[in-house]
Length: 162
Image (cartoon, rainbow, N blue to C red; front, side):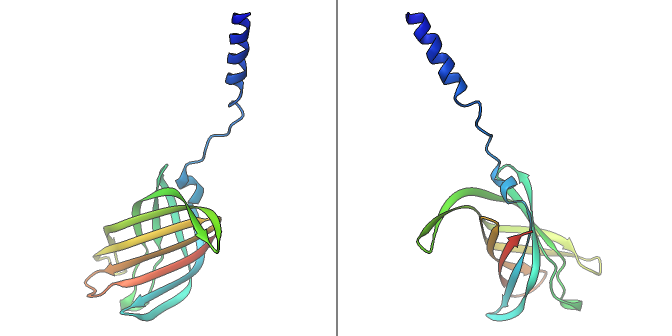
């Protein structure tokens, strides 16, 4: 009787989790292109306010690379820039008294180099990056310093996944 009871217990326990689907990595849940409103402030004044696309590509299960779209015109143009390995974590946020599941990323600083339209290498730094994904939306903020600019550009973007 004892052997039969143990066999039944083992059989019941081993079949319970066979139907569970594997959890999708957080980076895979948010990767894609997001279209929305970008506002850029330079020294507190609005210098750009338009609809743009930001891209997020999975670089590992828990990190994404972000593409900042090009901006400006002529000699004041900035090519598209990449911020690599933004770490992501699952979190919950309280929005209008409702708890929503979200995926958040924070990066204190990222530096890179990109070629401008004249083929010259220009250094850039992205500081204080915060990105929050919830449902099919993204909200991000960061400060960008490009080339020899003496000031940073404060950027806010709110978009929806295509």
